[in-house]
Image (tube, rainbow, N blue to C red; front, side, top):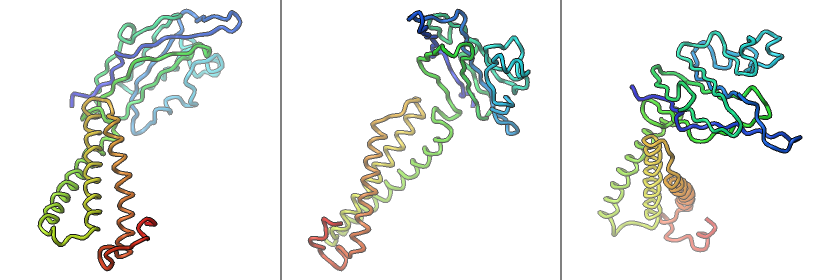
Length: 260
């Protein structure tokens, strides 16, 4: 839909090393940090582009013919990568913070084809080097920020929210209409409907906010979780009370209430 992209502009990389013998930080000049973006195809999973699942071009892998000498101490770049793949090597020096906006040629990638995209980050040159990443990686699907495996929750909880709201309104109308005839059990049912309405509304708003801004709303999620747990607890109690005949054939269950 012309909206999908992956953006690395706000990501920074720093090489942090430590030499125990000299008791000080020390990094090799030109420590390289590689990034790669590729799309899986139905015929081939992303790991299968590396037949033996060897990702770094070490001396041993070079001797075994898995990579050319030009890729020594770097990420192995397969020759049969699918069209539209991106590969970038960022050169790092000691205590130098590098932004992707400074060195990378693809800090912002527009996604033009639907598929599963794999983003790989690697440091193959020096195992004693720690790569410190700061910032964020921003990725947008055609319909928003929600990951594809969570997007179905948005229409699902929207539908549940409408169902709970309509049911609660109809139930409230019946309660008011027959107020002189209601029993205590119907108060429990009213509480269940209200809790379900609040839970599904908060979950829908949580996913809607996440989809629109890229950030999950923790307060909405916690509120939904609290009401959801309370609703499930209260529903089990209500089923137990109905089974005991409370409000139907018994006006009270006396001392058994606290056991329930």
